[in-house]
View 1 (cartoon, rainbow, N blue to C red):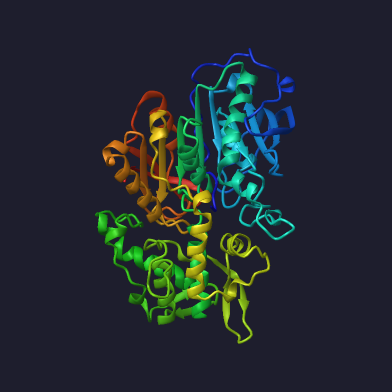
View 2: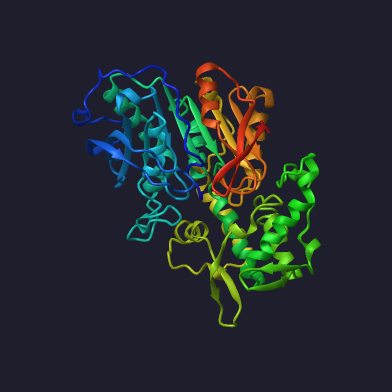
Length: 507
């Protein structure tokens, strides 16, 4: 959810040089889509546009393309959805269409996703999905609540998946009009929410895309905000806020203990299942702390916080509500340390991440002013279960039946960082195993769906591990040439530069 795309896309090889038999940009006809009405359609040529770097994506070189914007609504739903489609000049088109996902509560990624995709030669599209996440995607648009205080369910339906299918149809239609020929292959590319959206397409609209790249996927979309909010709840209930240096110390101590379990000392934990680190093992250690300018001693209270965070959300009776985080995850990135809130008794507690607080405020209580600091452990568990019951069917994309996508010839590649500090990787592993159980076992599922677990990598990038670099190329080779991806190439990023190299095999 913190990231949208993890790297600049590789330049895709041309299938053939596109001809100029299509329609000039300014004369493109207004497309149509079933179940929706077009409110506005614009198309204009853009030259020498540079998209700045953002969220780990490098800036593009100057781009020239046909810029198409389609605004549409679903009659009776009072929604407004905008699809953005960028079409490279015909001589640079690679005969492929690619849709780009979003992050957090943002359905799409705007120019920051479209730019690298167009630079790589794709005709590209993204959507605002009725703009439930505004302005950054980490908070919810107040328009999500109607004047009577109820939820605008049509907007939720757009965010959940309807707008993605609309975008796919619009993008392919405009692509065919502009180039005079349909795209030979269609791809999805997304991470976090974009990963969830990729699985939404595979499960609900299985013929939209030939290949889906869906990384660190938020397929358990209802449970994830609660997972993100769990560290806040733990600190609020325990009335203890460990400084960042202490939280980092737990992560590095786990790495020091378990780095070598795989036989390689590379600064990351590959064998998380056999890493039996306990935060209490470093109680009493003195840690240099830049926040305080002094050394800070690790206390039992600090260790209790870290232990509960790593264990994951639990009810007061010990029932596991959702997965925790692997040892070695960046605990200091799981919640907001500064700013903090000081209670009347002088105790300091953290401010909750809006991905959690907004879910509670808007989805559960329909009150943007709801005081989440009043939530107890028992109420947290109760609200968690209520949320899954009420919103799971529309927001979660964990249906293990991918048979329609498989039968359509589709292929999926997913990688998930094993040190993900936002979406617990165990949720993705659990989903893959459920698919295997339903669809004939690992070897059968491997024929169309590959999952790579990436040691040491955080959410959609970052962390201490090597980041995959060729997943898009591997997906295209699988879809177009039948070359099954056995490994992904990866490189570490140090000081802004990629260094070293490695490969990772399917989980």
